[in-house]
Image (cartoon, rainbow, N blue to C red; front, side, top):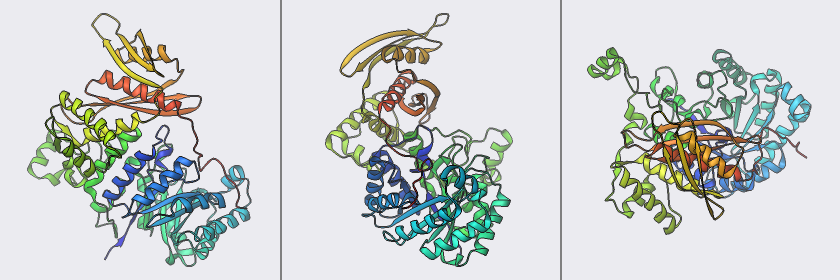
Length: 517
């Protein structure tokens, strides 16, 4: 019988550290519910001490999720651990994940602590966390560059203090599979009482090796992998959940483990995360990319038609592509609309919210004959975006593009109750729209990214536009969708502008440290 590989999803914590990927409490809950349908084992819901908003999100997810362990990150200090414990108090299955850096460069340059101080903080943090839950995870940040003897000493002590999971992170994405597997193998062999805990790995993708390193750790004895949907995460991201899961499933001849993941939920979950965070999935992304099961070569097409397994090692329907079915049309009623969205994990908080979303649905149904699940998810995502405090609202816009002339756009915005109009030219209709908006609001923001993706197939598909802006060192993503790409672009730009208006209140767990009293 194979061992179970625990899938620890940190999309809501580490994934949110991607520039501009901050999520609202409602958005986090929707993703958590999707992760529950996916049947991940552990959901790292956030960093409860970061802000009141993060605390509330962890608390809500802990209360609502029943089939997964809900976890909060906490630095190795009393304040963080108390916050995490309080946020998780109502959870059915709860875990505190505490960490401290153990590499010489981090201890000296970032923490400004001696190895002995780090050792004492690690042990003290685990003991305190055990007062809130029997499920405590300890991570040695930057384990990849930590001294092996010191790592073994710390791990031995935190196991004795009550840690039940030991996580070995490649925080900076520095390792390669052969070396990472060997490090995991040595740790398990050298640390006393190693058999009393679950060994875990958390790999970053700076060299494009996060999944390979994670799988090497599994072969060396790790029984938990920390990963994110779509590989989302800080810098180049984390190990991709869908790639880890399908590698283990597809190569069951190699891996002596299995997961409890419902793989048919992978694509729906991927699309939900992409829509909420504004991070599009590249077409050639493994498993969830639009081209993952596409065959252009005539030789490949011929082979697949004759026998699928000649060129496909997985079935598209096994990871959820077949789930993207037609669900509703313009004649569908409000109850059918509500029921389908509840099946997709979204529950309306009031009749007014339902009425608003249903009106958006009817408007879309007049433009688009076939309404798919992805369209419904985008409607909800746009409703969530609209609940961001809107100082700026798009009233109407028009754009003209003609051969031989420079495109021109006219935009009307509601600026704190005052309707104002402006016209501008640009290198294209989208550029003209953005120029007109900037003439009206003068944000001074710099455009970092403009991305367009179709939500479903067909020429009447909604276009999903992501706009990434930066100002004064802050980065935000704006999202807009419409069957008209130029209108979608205007919506996305206005959404990003409104997000820039929301004050920053969350702390970053990697950028400050307060020693345990």
